[in-house]
Image (tube, rainbow, N blue to C red):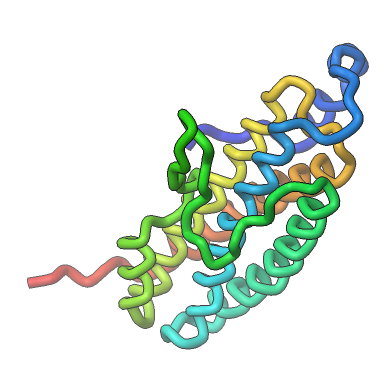
Length: 199
């Protein structure tokens, strides 16, 4: 995974006068804004589901504390994103869905957001306990967070996107928080004992 831009540099780029002056004039959020928020709802919902498994799957105390923070923070963010979509008159995705439905060629297609676990990977995580749960949870959440960061990168690379106040602040928070958490999660993963070789 490529190293993300430092957050301060990202903000400096976004608020550069030369860039903001070129943004198109419109009365509402861009299509990229709506796509980002719509896609981030199932992305967050999967992280919440993973986090709720920690206490019941024998996770370490440290991982349970981290998972609880994910559940509380991202549950609240899901509620805020759903409210924003309703205010824009946009469809609100089902938080129980594992895929985002995208309209392509006149047909609905299921699309997994970047970094999200497949149904098979979620089933594998659900079947693990103890340190093996910790190991797969941590490696999976690192990938999951990396996907969220890439979604922010895609948003801000889209011309005219991220000017809506809610979208800009939320995306900036996702970038900063999850970039920091990736380093924390990697440290937890590195501290685990090596996996036991299977005979």
